[in-house]
Image 1: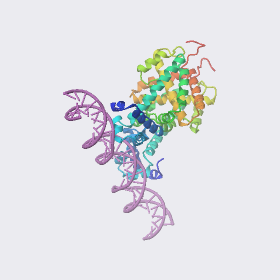
Image 2: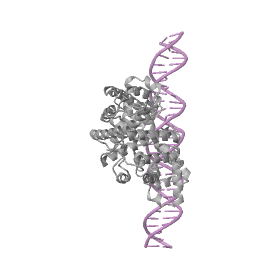
Image 3: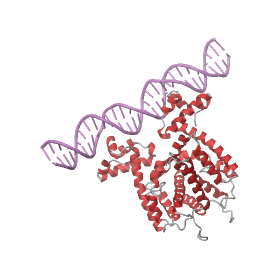
Image 4: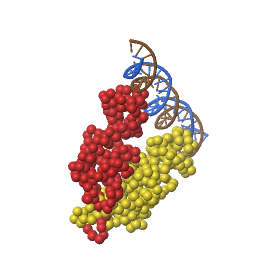
Length: 206
Length: 206
DNA sequence: GTTTTTCATGACACCGTGTCATTTATGACT
DNA sequence: AGTCATAAATGACACGGTGTCATGAAAAAC
């Protein structure tokens, strides 16, 4: 978390700083980003940066968190407009994220360098890798009737699977610079395979 | 790829260097690793390191590639002993990898900092995110009768899905330091969900 | 208007990387 | 066994980036 000093900053200076950081993290991934570039862009002295943030990571995760909050809002909205259908929601959500122009390069750098720590932060937007408040909250919105689960417990694993495949699809989209429709087609195929299952039931062939 | 000079090295010196690098990359992930530590451990001057490798990454990916070759060998062996059943094979494979004592910390650091580049390298052991020779080769070993696919083309996506979920399970195991049996249980549950499908067919309720 | 707390600033110490000029080893050819 | 050419070894050093800290300015409190 940024230091209190950062939050006390006048709105415009804060915004300048945020934009400068965003620009640098859009240029290169976290580990290649340089504080020197950020302060040059923002026009502040080096010492000030450390007045506001612990370090480079602190600034990065602050931005990522902000972005994630927006995504979470979008996700909940979509879930409700799809009447709790998790698959339809994921498909809509996938399209929204890969269509974002504003954050394209930031997202690209982030997805292509998705450490576990980054993934955990990002996951908060639509699922979670731990059973926390978030999971409980989302869980209540989900239509469980259409899911092939025997108890509430299995829902957690269903989430995990969908999240894993979705993450991978994001990475693929950015890594291979797929056009939106091509990424969507692939994602749709994978979601359908997930729905119907990968295994053929030997009792009812075909 | 390491430079020719490295491969020309006498076997024992090469081995010393490999062990030193492995030790450093087991201590910390790629980006935190220091060449200084590696050369100190190996007892060679700084300049020599650059005689052998392009840089830190070069050494890391060399090690990762070596490890991946072993994994690939294990995977093919398991696939054959399971008569081409991809699910049984993955489950055996998962257990083998998380049980490795020798490379535990190296793997942990690698999985928790799985950039796209690292994932691509690692993927070569059991699948691939591109349709390359590897995929074709593995494809021929797979028993497609038990899979719920209509054509050879869908097999690729089935692979993608299984790989995504498996990766995520690896990361989870290392991130939460799960005991082997607990990680196995979770993995089994997820593989079963993948097999039977996440969606309930509304035409045949329950 | 004085004291106290908060914020701004940039020089600097520190550390790691990658380079390069110089030295040393190897070994082929005569 | 000497000359030459190629390959390998070496460590000092330049460069660049990070984080700190002492000092000064500003704001707020009283």
